[in-house]
Image 1: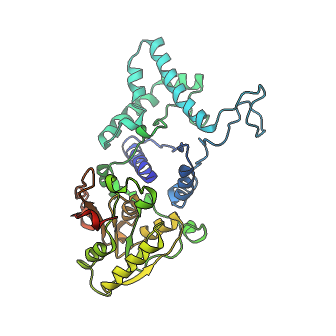
Image 2: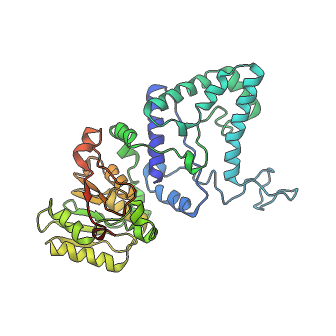
Length: 370
């Protein structure tokens, strides 16, 4: 799911560099959760993020707010030190406060209009992003604004003593790339941006076995393991083995090689998929239990075909990272009586993606999914 935020940044970075001659620097503020820590470790398997400092705004470590070098959790006055995450939030509020003061002292309300453009979560489309970057470029040319940033020390750091773009550290304020934004920037280097680092693949534990060039990869996400009480109503249920095998056999000939990636699914369900696929004369290889990043690496290196539920961000992003090397992806949706909100099919506005990634929707009974 975090890749969607990085895809948004890729769009911002691309527009900034090609249209405004701006060279942006990415700073990451992790969510305050164990999942965010594991996501940060895993995303460093991708070459674009190998050297990002994911601990710059960490919520588990205090900052040295007294210029001391000790690791104590309190300062010399006995007060708790700020956490790095809190310090980063302060930078955002200090920037807003300084811009407000400058507007009031100069009686120039345009400054606050420019300041509002720094909050990127309100910029959803490429045209919205362009509008924000246009205002941002204007701020970087305004001597009074730059002087105030230097005087009040409200830039991100001493190497970047100028206005900075941001989003707030809340779920509702997340910046994510819409399908339309992904379609638009896919052909401008998005697959390469998310490519696995070669050294990390071989030496960093990010990847293990990879699919054969003629092997279809089937992903069973098993949302029921994570959300047993809500999976049916939410829409995370997946086709059961028999229906999955029927879907595959409607397209693939007998004897096709299939690699089954089933993540955290229990052994009984994995065995039932293997049995159903073999009953349809497919040659099945089960990948077994491996780490989440190794599962994702395997999916992202599918070549002949990739199959999975459209609800799985794993399968969705793997189909994009594969680039032109992936010949076909089928991300299916299922509607069934107990589902609260039905899913609809879509066709990518990107001609290349529309030809390779397909989103069929099946209307089935509750008993056909789990």
